[in-house]
Image (cartoon, rainbow, N blue to C red; front, side):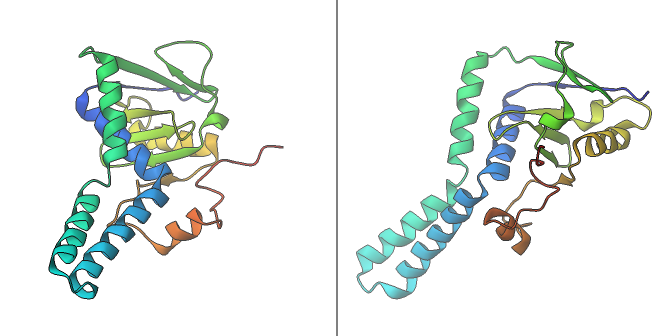
Length: 193
């Protein structure tokens, strides 16, 4: 029986990173709308509006909007950081074929409750809802096959594929299809009978 353990020491940086990934994964439409609106404002201000004051205002607003696309994620992160009051916990995880335990608490999180598996260079993100998930530091994973074994176990038990957090640089047409109805069966919740 394969058992894996991992942990994460929460900090301001991990809370901010988690909030940003969560926002990018579950609110891609909002971010895409913000990018589109900011580009539109800049283009209109630069080429369509003849009045200099209005043109500069539109360019300014477009730039401000673009630089604040992660404002909702930052707001959420700041609220969570304030709740910790400087006392950031270390969370310990244990994974077995039956489920995931967080700090040894019962009951185990069943794998069918996980709706999205996301991975970046340093962390794994296991989302149980758009509002809640777990963040695991890859370098802390212990077990038979290390991080690769844990990734395989989670993919097998959840029936999901690992994805990267969407960003402006890795955005693809498939992301648009997934957002507007053509959902990929391996990147979201499973149908339950």
